Amino acid sequence: MTTQAEALRATADEWRLPDKGKVGMACLIVAESAIFIIFVIAYLYYLGKSLSGPTPAQVLSVPVFGTICLLSSSITVHFAVTTLEKNKTALSNIWLALTVLLGGIFMVSTAMEWHELIYEHGLTIQTNLFGTTYYSLVGLHASHVLVGLILLSAVLVFGLAGKLDHHHARRLDVLSYYWHFVDAVWIVVFTVVYVLGR
View 1 (tube, rainbow, N blue to C red):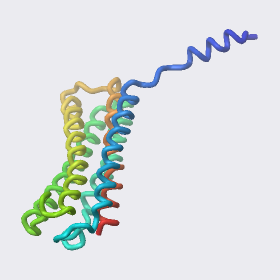
View 2: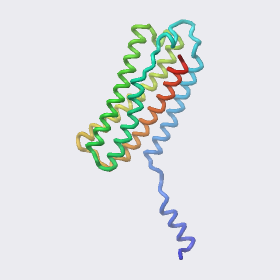
View 3: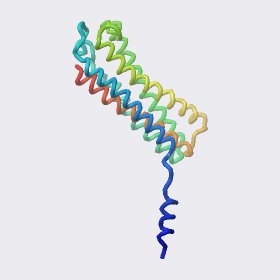
View 4: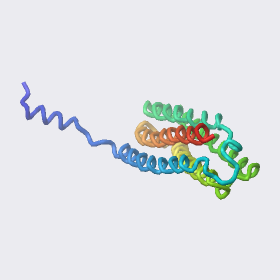
């Protein structure tokens, strides 16, 4: 029969400090969420207050394909992590490459949208309040996607060089949290800009 002191000692031995990487990423996500909230509120506040055109309804088209690609990349990065945990590095590299490809397609679709808005509709960041808030919010998100793509591409390079195995799965998992966050933010941005804002 175990004593109360032994039971407490066993419980203390089972407790582990939280993973530093996950805690750090959680803190980053909270801080970044606050920034995005400010930009979303600013967009909604100034919506419809532009004194001149063009208006969102006149120039914005819904980026369905780019959105599908970006949201699908959350699935592929999840599989990249799970396959690396099982030490299936070649398969993990394929999932990582698909994630980078899907994220890249999203960035290209954003660039094409901006090109059309600037050169065909004359909407720049200085045109009106809509242009200022639109490019600020969507650009903030695009910059986060770009950072994520750079980091995922670096991991992919290490994977293709044979320097990645199951010991690195935890780190890739932490990075995947950032990528899931970027995707979740896009759902909010998409809803605000392309659904409510039109």
